[in-house]
Length: 217
Image 1 (cartoon, rainbow, N blue to C red):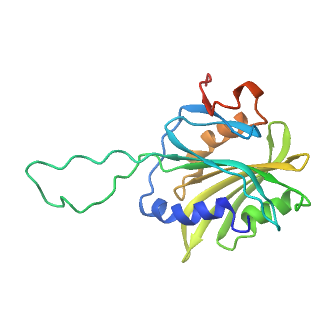
Image 2 (cartoon, rainbow, N blue to C red):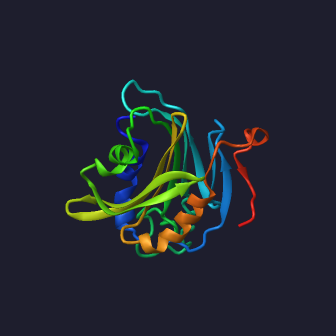
Image 3 (tube, rainbow, N blue to C red):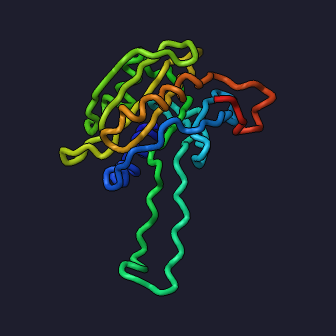
């Protein structure tokens, strides 16, 4: 996992976020996601589209044991006017009202000495990341670290990134990340902390085959 899933997503989405930066909805409705590898569960935005990441074993660096990407769905394009009009047919895709992408990963941690080493691999070691904040957090009772940064290109912030991580236990660590329009961390922080507080390592055996489930807010 030399080119991490997080970095790949930031590279692919940051430009679109910068071009269409808008405030995301507050107090998103959340729905619990159960990892099919039963390594974790978390409450993610209910309106989002879920993409499961399969395990990826590598010889050097941490391996991806399981993961999920939760991203807003594009709204259906408006039907063309029967009378035509200026700009009709330009083919501009609709802009979703919510632009924030979440991802949750379970990774091997044998290659990390401590949380700062883990942060170096996932965030702070990337020269395009301008770190804005670091603070200690708890992830399902486990010691963790939260790093907030801007993804910068050409001297301009393309996207904001918040990454919470923990070394976990028995060689399995966890990463929860959000990628959002630049300058929106203050608005995004409450929902990110709600998702973070919902994160649980492992999942009940009876729920392994059901990826999503309703849960009171």
